[in-house]
Image 1 (cartoon, rainbow, N blue to C red):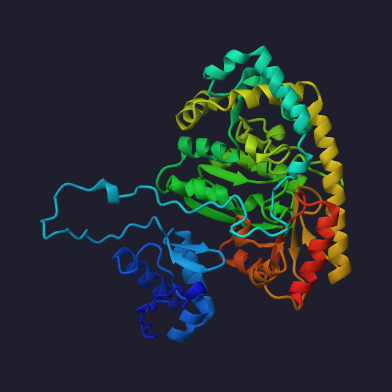
Image 2 (image 1 turned 45 degrees about the vertical axis):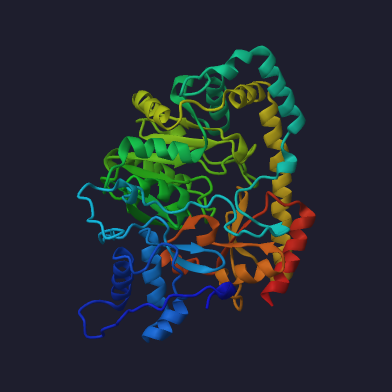
Length: 494
């Protein structure tokens, strides 16, 4: 029985040690066959990996890897904390069963032929229950949002340009905001661009959809980091991309690992997601030297670039791009809040028209009132003042987190603490693995996240390397809450 008495399907799988086929592939193909012929229906809960391994007399790791592949290909989905289920969007290959004895119509029934088979992209904590000390990744502190100032900006925009509320703006965005963004990225990230190269988007996901719409079709090769951002992988796969995963080490990706011939190369060089490492300057230069031979565009997601603590940030790849091979993605979701739905792309000139058309097909325009208010906020210097303020606060919170981890657990092995809003903590010897610690912590009112539940994707060796890594976001908690959260974490780890 499952949680709360929920039944678990016993799978009719037979393992043949004499077959010229690996055990993992046997498990994968038999479960996939059960799903496609309709014997395992959408929403059916599968046995836990350990239980199935015991039933089949094989190692648990074999079952885990088979489940992982089925999940990666969209056949299974994980529902925390209950277990693994057949995906709700998988359509069986077998014929439909006619009702009432009628002969099945020869006409195709498109109601049961979903074209899209994408996986769920979790952008908030995957748990239904709320915990008081939640170290969720990438969440700014809503208490620090300049609410009074923003309300004043909104009121000003309504008084000055009320007509904007009833009309569509340029799909590329309000020209005033595009101009302000061009000036901001010039100062903050060293990027030389004019307003015509800036396109306002409703966050990074929309920018990724624009690029996928332009360049990705079935089996188009797209390079992603491993481990990397799940949201990007899901977007590319939903357009049919064939993902090529490249490893990340302490200095980011190695340019020599990037294969030629991919359409897009998606990278997070400033604060790599999820490890938090920064792509070194030497590798940035080598990467751009190689770019002309790659045959595709580098998509630079400048994730967390607004938050740097111990030294000045390295130049954006886009600022070093002399051949217009880099598409730059930026967002205000971390500095102001995801609820505003405002981000931006810096495009090579020759892509502007096509990208604007693609964006218009996704979304005619971004919200006018938010755009007008943000333009005024940037122009007035208020945005830069806000950034300086929250940088200081988040740096202090990072220091409290590192100090608390050190006091409770000894020397801290972590990556990503030099910048951003989260760090990746390598668990000390003697600790449970990350997914086990994650479950224990929730019983103590604490949210920490393993790589898979932290909205990240890891495959192959990277999955095993990061099995003892937890992601801890510190921006959304104040210093007292962080200290108490770590204290409770220490109780959970005992």
